[in-house]
Length: 236
Image 1 (tube, helix red, strand yellow):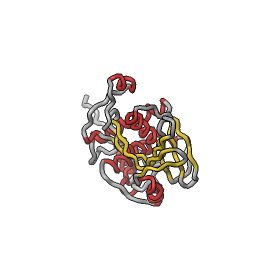
Image 2 (image 1 turned 60 degrees about the horizontal axis):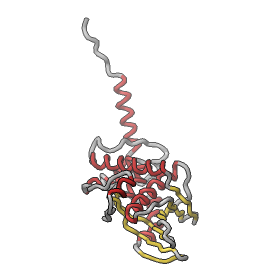
Image 3 (image 1 turned 90 degrees about the vertical axis):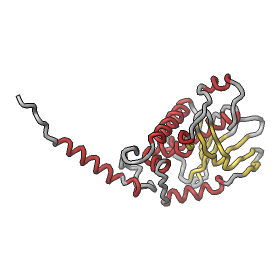
Image 4 (image 1 turned 30 degrees about the vertical axis):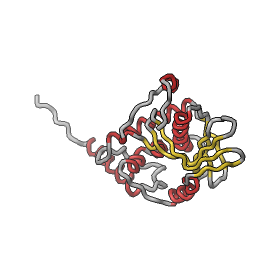
């Protein structure tokens, strides 16, 4: 990993460089999973469970070209595909779909490819957090400030600019810490985040492994039973 040459750089970034144990390293892809659903993130990154459905197959097909490492020049812009990313400051590791390096010393632009349409509001926040983490890595690797990235919709053939605001950066850093705590706790019974069984679940490829309806129903039954536990009064 690339180290900064001065302590002043570290202070300017606000968070010092440090050594991370292997189990503390957070995969950049885990951030979008955790933002969308902590339980989904735990099943993938702790339990090593991943199942395909039509949505994951479409996404994987859309990433095939971007995932192949290559360097090309497009309209004067150097384009790196499948670029490895890391951050010693935040303990991150992963890979960018695409990073564009504009001419004239302008900062690099991370680009995330998505199969679905352009998502706005809360739905697009999960992708923006992952993209912001890529920017944190690029800033450390190249010693520059990365003000914005982009999400490219393969189905809509449209590109949406994502500004890396202070609020988005803080949210990304907070989620990095949350994922790390989850990894440090480890998996196993009673350690996974609770199932929620809401509108996100039907389209999730892990619904059979997660069993949200069953888990939530069992939890509700336990709570209901607890309401009727008789209270033994002390004898007078």
